[in-house]
Length: 557
Ligand SMILES: Cc1cc2nc3c(=O)[nH]c(=O)nc-3n(C[C@H](O)[C@H](O)[C@H](O)COP(=O)(O)OP(=O)(O)OC[C@H]3O[C@@H](n4cnc5c(N)ncnc54)[C@H](O)[C@@H]3O)c2cc1C
Image (cartoon, rainbow, N blue to C red):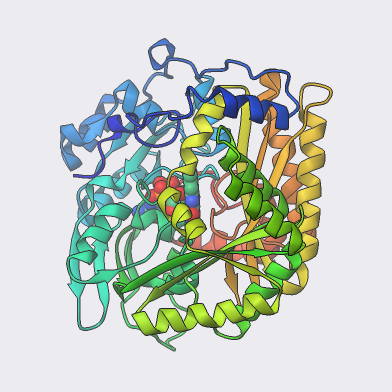
């Protein structure tokens, strides 16, 4: 039932048994050091789990007995591994703290409920005994969404939903499915596949993240252009709150006032705990066609995506790298490989076609029924050519598909070698996107330069357009930099602040799909306005009067 937590890294990404293919790639590390202006990389491993100590468990014997009585003693865990594993999520900031051995935010215990009734009983019990409750799906939040912060409470438990992972019903007539919220991506897709369906929600964290987490932070999968974001596919949900159960209904559409499901989407566990959800599913696609294009620059690539969205081309994914990201992955892919004649010929051809270092690669995906997918592909092909692109065929698309869930494994070996890597994302309307891109990129570059430890060291800032709409798109930044080892956290905070200030000042949202959590909460009032925050606080007070649910997340302090 669920994913065994001991099989996942407690202070890094993914399966504990995952083999680090890069360990012996000296050529690659030397290249990265040169790119970052570092004379050499440094050995900076995280602290061993056995060396660490946790704060004492603050639960009383009565608390413990009460919880045991609700879920059974085997589903209340307070061993060191469980508490450490659930202390934080999986952002760069979280990993800095975990690797340094900072377990100050570890919950007092981790509870694994097995149904809505148990969740409701735990919440009522926790509210009566002043225990903060942190809802936890896969724990892959990158915005401090599951950190064990207690607010003003002395005691905190994390409620890990992973034992609630049943698919309750697949309604093949309506094309909907109902599942428990703790089900992780692969298990949900397997159950849907058996009935010929897919949800198609594939965030890069797919293997470990859960249905409840996707809804909780309004996530977007890599194929969101076709399959939609959480708000597009959520039909209805059950939200367990300290005041009782809020069921949002499951009609396909309704004009009966504001929809309660909008209180669930993006509520990040502060209003209640999603225990079940009904979702819209699709027939499995007959065709999955991913291919590459090369544009002369970022502007023409963005213009092509905008045209495709405004001309109703039904692509599954249009992912456009900026020139920095295109150059980085090209160089990375060639490290350690002999420069062959075919490399030379392709370079020559690109030169002839006037593709220089401003060139930008785009991966386009088309899924669905055979004819519809190929018609969409042909439509996009024509648009891409209209904007001067070169069609590169399938290889780039296939490589992306093969590695789509692997890239996160690169972060731990980098952090082991004195290199930091983080990501952030935003969205804005097309008319603001160019300025937003330039300002965020400049802010990241400047902040990195100001915080790198040595003269001559520099950062790498890359970006891609990841999700698009007729009226705008999201930008996803990845930045790599030499770690300031004696002030890692201050470095992260300075870079994050500079970038988020630039995003807010240039009309972007603080998050397109990662959510708010603790990390973006300081900026949320600027986005929602004080009246908006007051309205959200009023909802919180109605559903969670004692404020036990996920303290410190989403709302400003
Ligand atoms: C490497 C990596 C890649 C990522 N790629 C993507 C991506 O492509 N797209 C994307 O959208 N996100 C992405 N993310 C962010 C993150 O994985 C997503 O936010 C994910 O959907 C969270 O799901 P989870 O089950 O891990 O939720 P958690 O991290 O456990 O929780 C997320 C938030 O929802 C709350 N929550 C969790 N379950 C429930 C519930 N049942 N009821 C109420 N609240 C709940 C938590 O308290 C928290 O506030 C990525 C993260 C990583 C580390």
